[in-house]
Length: 180
Length: 143
Image (tube, rainbow over all chains, first blue to last red; front, side):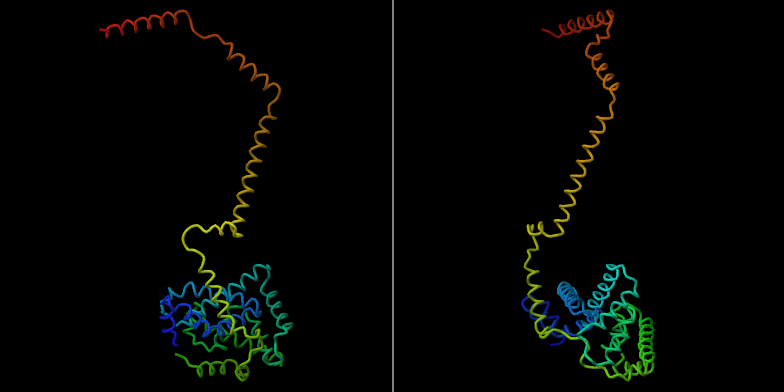
């Protein structure tokens, strides 16, 4: 089913639950990995995913279709992830560097990590980026999202996103060259 | 609109080493078994439970919600604090009176009770005359 068909089906009360279930099955993994790459921990990601899908359910009827459905879903998910990280920093009264170190040590201690050294290094390099820059990098690098779409997700101009991605990619590259 | 080739070429230009790293299909984080199969059903149950709550009318369960308990608690604390402040203020007023104040108050009260009416004989005469005149005037309208 296309997104248009799913949305039309969702608007009909008799098929709403079915349509929503289908939308979740279609997009849950993309949203999960978007959030998981930002917050790292599965339990945190799972809590956020529940909030995100409740918000999607509550607002999907008012979705006008001015942007693509996946762009709208990504916007909700990335907002939740960024808000979560900001709240977490405030809660622990932590400076950015402290949180970064905490994230690093968690990545080091994380038993979920596979043994692939290059992939681990890549994750560590990406984790060193500031949150919003990391979001931009992930959307471009992993999701291969065009800047025009990303602009709708992040709410930033295409020019600023290009600059942000270029800085991020160079930082990640230099992380590898320093380590090697 | 850009396609994936444009995006890969861009990365190749900015960060050639990073671009050479193959993007792994399997990510370095693990997910619990069957998580993605079960998640939509768990979510649907959660959403249906939420939509079962009546939208109209008063829901008594809300009184016992943690938010309401906090509000009730805050109101109770404010009431108790208010009563305590009020009592302390009255007590302070009473204890602030000296023996002299009490004596003065008692004297003033005694004077008020025993004080004679401040009228003169002339006043009484005028008043009697007025009453007399008024009763006469009323007779004009009789019959």
